[in-house]
Length: 152
Image (tube, rainbow, N blue to C red):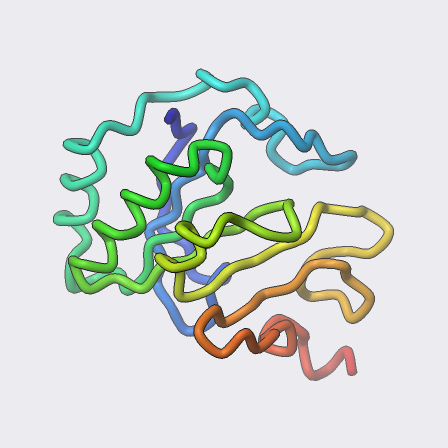
């Protein structure tokens, strides 16, 4: 599994400071994708377990969530990395363009964002989006957390 970059994200998971990994190899190739460089499988650096653990240890106590932008196509490794994050006390999130993910991934998640990017429907901050931000344990859709109250 290759990642293009790692960044600290403040808006993708409401109320969380997230360590965000952008995973390479997305096959969806959505029209209007903001990250087409992620379509190529090895367009980045290999995310080894040592690199991953070093990053988690570096941000322990500072970040509260580990977020993967994609990676469900590496289901076994993603599930393992999510489990490692949870064991270290992190909450976990996956952003996928799919509508579902395998149960063994779902079991390792706190939140899941589903839905392919469709430009005319917009993202999570749009009232007409096809995307869903879900709290996994309750299966509750939390899209309202992304909508600016001034736009209601």
